[in-house]
Image (tube, rainbow, N blue to C red):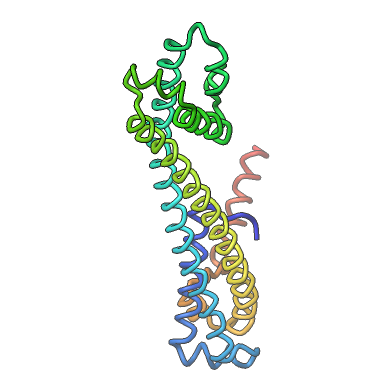
Length: 242
C-alpha cells in the first residue's frame, strides 16, 4: 500500500467500517460470502484489523500532538537558556577583557554555538567553571553574578537540556506510532482488498447488496442508451456528408 495521506486514511477506515460491519449485520450477505470462505468468524478477523487500525491512528495522532507540544515548550525554554548564556558571556567579556585566560577557562572565546549539543556543552562548562574557579567567581560576584545568581542561571541551561531530552523522546514515540499506524493500515488494506474482490464475485447477481456494503456498481448502458448513442453517431455522420 502506498503511503496514505490523512484523507485516504479516513477513506480506508470509512470503507472498511461500512464493508465489515454491514457484512456482519446482514444474514443474507453472510450467506453469500460464506460460500466463498468468508464465514462470520473470518469477517470478525477483518473487524479486529479495523479496530486495531483505528487505535493505531488515534495513538499516532496523540503522539504527534505530544511531539508538537514538546517542541513548542522546547523553543521557549531554549530562548531563555540562550539568553542566560549570552548575558553571562557579555558580563564576562567586560570583566575579563584584559584577561583572555579567564575567558578561555569559561569557554567564552567565540560565537555562541547554534547546534543544541554544542551549546549545552559550552554553556554548562561556562557556568560550572564560573562557580568552581574561586578567582572567577570572586570577580563576577562584584558584577551581579554571585553564587546564587550563577546557580539560578545555570538551572536555565539544565531546564533546556531536560526539555531537549523530552522532545527527543516525544519525537521517537511519534515516529514509532507512525510506523505502527502504517503497519496496521497496511494489514487492513490487504484484508479489505481481498474481501471486496470476493464480494464482487459472491454478490455479482445482487448489486443492491453490494451497494449496501458501499461498493460502487458500474452497470453497462441499457439497450435504449446504446441505441441513442448509435443514433447520435449516425446523425453526426450525415451532417459531415452534407
